[in-house]
Each structure stands twice: as structure tokens, then as C-alpha cells.
Amino acid sequence: METELPQFIKSILILLKFLSYKVKMAKFRTISEFQSPTHFNLVEWQKENRFHLQTAEDQCRLAERIRAESSKIQDNVVQVLEKNKLESNARFKERIVEAEFCRDEVERVRTWLQLELEPLRTIRCRLEAALRSIESCNYQITQKCRFLRYLVTVIRSRYVGRDR
Image (cartoon, rainbow, N blue to C red; front, side, top):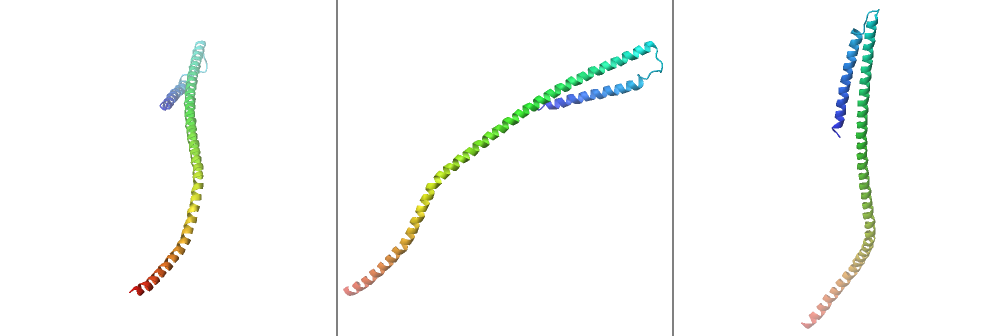
């Protein structure tokens, strides 16, 4: 279909060239052939009238051919435009469906993440509480351990010194 549009243009150009030739010829005839003496006799008058009638009929046929060709070109252009419009609309509908699918997919993942985040938040809070508990207990345990080591060293020094 893409090659038809230039063919339409070629047809129009050919038609325009033909028309311009006919117009030039009509001007030439008007200037040279249609100029007649001021007085006509009957034969000349009939001949001149037949010539005018023939020229008018030729122009009428030419106008009808041009109108028919223009009508065909217009119909073809309308068909091409309608086809392009349908194709464009179909592509837009496909893109809309893809965008809606992506939006639905993102929404589904978002709800899934929200459902997964709640237990993770709970676990995080528990771990932080446990860490705080361990840190506070760790200090106390360390202090107890140091005190007990001190006691052990003191007691050993007393008992070790007695046995010897």
C-alpha cells in the first residue's frame, strides 16, 4: 500500500500536465483560430459554431475524465487512510493492553510485598529486642565473669600459697 500513494501522485501529475497542455492549446486556438473577420457568411458561421461545439464537448469529456480520475484517487486515498487509521488504532489498543497488564502486575507484586513485609517487620522487631537484651545481659555477664575470675585468682593465691 505504501507504493500506491506515489502512484496517485504520478497520476495527478500526468493529469495536470495533460490539462496544462490542453489549456495552452485552447489559448493558442483562441488567439489564432477563433479570430475571425467581423462579417461571417453562413458557411463560416456554421463551421465556427461546429468548432466551438467540438471544443466544448472535448473540454466536457476532459472534465469528466478528470473528475472520474480525481474521484478514484480520492477513494483510494480514503481507503489507505482508513486502513492506516485501523492499524494505528489496533497498535494503540495493544499498547493499552500491555500497559494495563504491566500496571496489574506491578499492583500484584506490590500487594505481595506488603504481605511479606509485615512478618519481616515483626521478625526485625523481635531480633532488635533480642539484641538489646543480649547487649544488656552481656555487660552483666561480663561483669560477673570478671568478678568470678578475680575471686578464683584470689582464692587460688590463698590456697596455693598454703600448700607449699
